[in-house]
Image (spheres, rainbow, N blue to C red):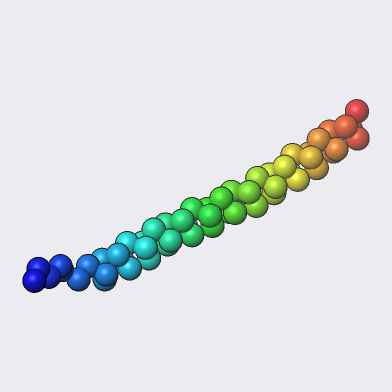
Length: 54
């Protein structure tokens, strides 16, 4: 009878790495979105200050 090597540890490690990479990517998108909203608020406040000066 032929036996196959047990590679379940490698499979689990691969899933952990894949999900960790996806988690980091999603967290990166969240941070970019938060920074974008902050930049937008800053630009809008500068725009209102400029329009009040005129």
